[in-house]
Length: 184
Image (cartoon, rainbow, N blue to C red; front, side):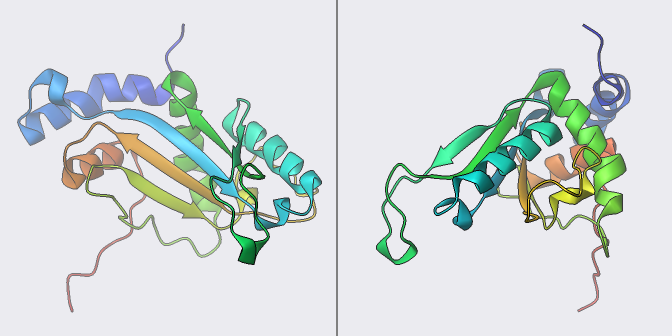
């Protein structure tokens, strides 16, 4: 199986550089383990056609079939019952993960309106969460699909033990992080 461009970059440049910079054992060097794409939609409660559109578009973006997510609890105020479909998600691993990351960094994020960089929103376990306002920034999405444009949550899970190690890993891939102002 042919390796993707980012996978080759990781093995040839990023991994040795991180090993030297962070002073880690070769097996301790952080890597990306999976990328999860998630779309939630409150209008899917009343209209199942909306959820089918979400599944179709998410499948085009990810390159594999998404899974419908269901409500775990009933919430009367939202007219939500346990077991109702309320969104869709897909988990990417291996070569599909690297292909998606390449498209995200080089095509989709620069196409976002008023883009000033990715905010450093790591959880304390070295995972990055991105919120995309409109899924039409991806080249696979047609403008005429569905009546609505939805947002997208992207979680990039890494094996890094700290947020700093995860930041260096993603910076090595070319993730356009926002410039932080140190004056305040």
